[in-house]
Length: 174
Image (tube, rainbow, N blue to C red; front, side, top):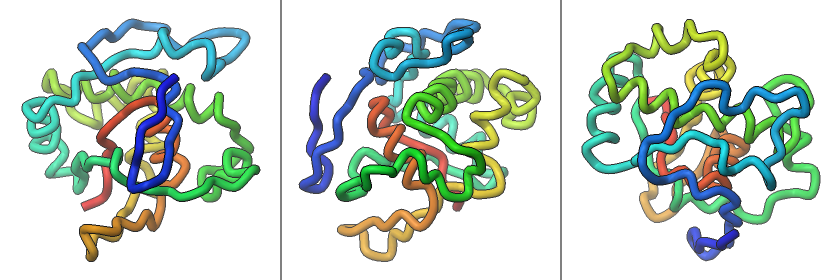
């Protein structure tokens, strides 16, 4: 595990998932559930290169979304019960269920990058929960009126988990 400095706050990066694209089926399906500390190697990878991000942004433009950098966002000190209080997400979650849900995100990006529409990907039963988390009724929204102090108005749990998983970009509502 490594720590990365993010606006003077330390975020523990538990999984190095920013690398070459390596998507496999049934990555997160297990009777025992996902264990964030043990199962990082099973997560799919995505190359967050400028070309890939620009290509996906072109595809998402009509949907009202775009990929924004999130690795610089300082969420501050997370409360002790942060993962159990998942706000609007509905249902009780913990770090492992958040990681399991967000773990499919690189596959969604890979499929968008290869030309599939978001609607097509959303129809995949395995990816549907992640699509709902990232593109559903409560999108991640950022207040960027002060570029030196980006404020998360909705999506702290998604951003925190993405940072822990080593993701550098997430879809935000435009």
